[in-house]
Length: 450
Image (cartoon, rainbow, N blue to C red; front, side):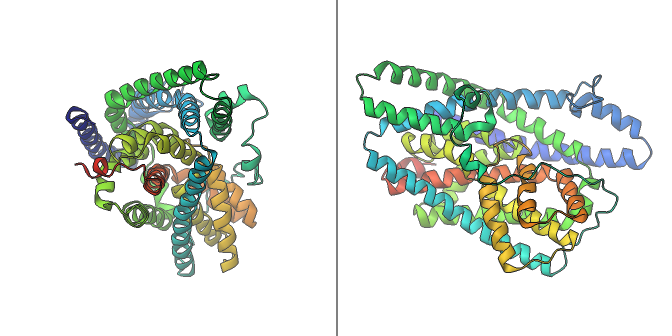
């Protein structure tokens, strides 16, 4: 990477940092304004402001709303979601197609899964220990009366995640961003088939896939560099303006516990894994990955953050493109450490609210279900709280009190989901660094470069 590229990368990180600070500040002011107007009987004034700037224009009864901030934010996220499927498919196909030795491919795949499990194990252990302490201290007995019961999503067997890896219809697999794991399977199959046929017979196909990948990279670079910082500001401001104090007050202990754990694992846990697993400077990692964390936090979508994560890992952290192209898209679909932490804490919180006892064996079951359910969570905003009902069904926390507490989680979880996404995307980068280091494909000079 040349000096000009380096300056551009630093400029992008600085812009995102400034956008984060400005978004949080403006959001806090709007939160104060909202509470002030609602508390002084001026709901009509706030409703007008909300309709003009923040209203979800797709919601029922919002036919006359402008929702300027909502519109801008969604246009940005959709422009990134537009290229998720082609990017995942082309990058993994090329990565697999470039590894002609099946033993090397098998070794990289095994190392990737092992590092995913290592990161998940420590995340779940931290969540279970903390959740148990808070539960036994009685801090999760929240007051949830007055909420309407909500049955949530239909409980499903977590093993459906395995079944859905192989799509029954190739068109359906490419037609939805929620079927990314099936796209990964198809890409791996195509890459292996290209290797089996050899370079001469698949030269045209390889060139087509490579050119499509190049187009996707140009598009995402333009969107991220030109509109990313402004979109971060818009998304943050709208989140604060939409969710008032009343959403957070009933479950303050859950919010504080979840945020504290997520931040702890983000700024301490991941750097330690990089220091031990890749023997690289953890401070350098934190500085360079910060823009990816901010981007994931703002968009609340692992899929939307994938392009920037790939760019950062390959250009700033020195991960070889072959490793990044395989690990990051796969991690986006099955490596959800932040989601797992949130789901464990939320399940323990619901158990406390609903009066369920919590034993060590139940905690282990919750952790295993969280690991499986998080792997099947779509890389989209709000998906983690919806899939949470699968865990509740698995451990039998389904009485009326549990459903009321679950409704509370659905109401307040949006800000927490933002931090969850930051953890998820950074976890993918950690694994790519560790795998690249073990394969001798980590450019140490580029990683250490300021």
